Image (cartoon, rainbow over all chains, first blue to last red; front, side, top):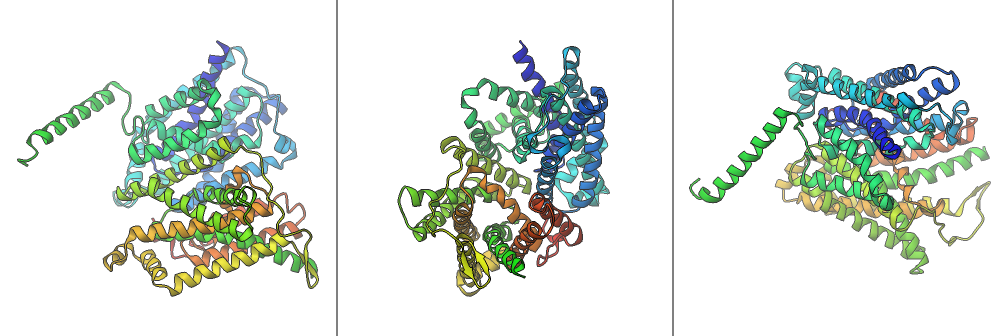
Length: 300
Length: 294
């Protein structure tokens, strides 16, 4: 029971970070190699506040989100005007730089990492679930707001979005800051759930793993990210014997998805009653279309 | 003065390896307008190809270098055919290319970890031991080999690009793919060619880098330096990538040599440089304006 609870806790924590990347990559079309850096900032701030200063969890979580958000504003100012690759490389440099800073900072025990961080006990174990639920509500409301539609417009065609009067820079900044705040909060939750953090846990592989969950779930789908986060956190636990091959499989799956089914599990659609109806209708339409094509194709 | 000369040679030597990595990456960028983030994995495979060519097949250095170049070139072309071509055919958005490159890199790196294992491997010492004295300074044998072989490979590349018909075809395609296709230059051929050239150079970089340090599956992470070098010099520009890589190598060694605690924070200086370049001149030293690189 405790084991299953542990997996669910980790899934909820991952979900918080994944939702942020879902907004950034799935809805806005920005790709980051450096979000583990925001997680690291959050994790270390929470660890310092709860372990060294004896402050309560909720305060640490808030501060972690805030700090990651502030850093992202700075990063965004510098990098968001850059296009495509430049932005990716800048985020890559950012993530690595953050990791290097923590690896060389004696106060947080450098590369060996911090242990005996106060952990969630008893009722506190509900915190990750509550935070994850809040994050889903926030993300859902964001993407279904005017701001959210602006993000999709920016993803689809930046120039056209600009012509239509959307402040592209502002939209990108909103997506970056929201994703960084969520990553920071996820880092804080992770520090206080596991009780141990080290700079090497926040490397580029961590950043890409989170993005992969978004891709699995489907770009541009919040419910896809939720399903993806729980599935991809639980599956490796079930297939523990093949743990060496887990990332091989992830990498291969990403290529196959991009080549064959770029929308992922639920790309562009949501698991709500109306979303499911829409998916069913689209499915029926495809079948009808295929039938019409095979029977009366010659006439057209 | 001696320390200065010593650092200068060391910096040029590491910079020349960055250059080998950066030009392959820049070539692909100039044609396809996207960063092949799987380039590091191809370099890593090159280091392994070279290692096994030497230890199992018992080839001499030259043979192992050719094997590494061939192997990495093939891998790079296979990557293009299997992963990127379907996306090109579909005119998929830029984001999909980046994601696919990331997936490919993850697949290759972790396949090596799962099959060969994460333990670092040492190349046999084929250049002999002890540094070589050049005037007042001592140069490591591997460092000298890195410098000479990289310089020769890069010179060959530049001659090829500038003075052969095929090289001119690459230039034309980089300038305008549609127009050059109308002139009878097959874009597919050029894309395969740049992946093959980039892969071969990556293989040579891999074997040299593996000999200087060790061979392990995360070796490809070093390419972040070559990406930065390419941005520094201007994405998509070959001379830019060369210049950026050499300057980056020099910056690194001089920071380690002259600034207290420099070695520890060496990489932070590199990222600082990246940030300054991105603020002051995002197009890099020799790049075109970044505006038309959407």
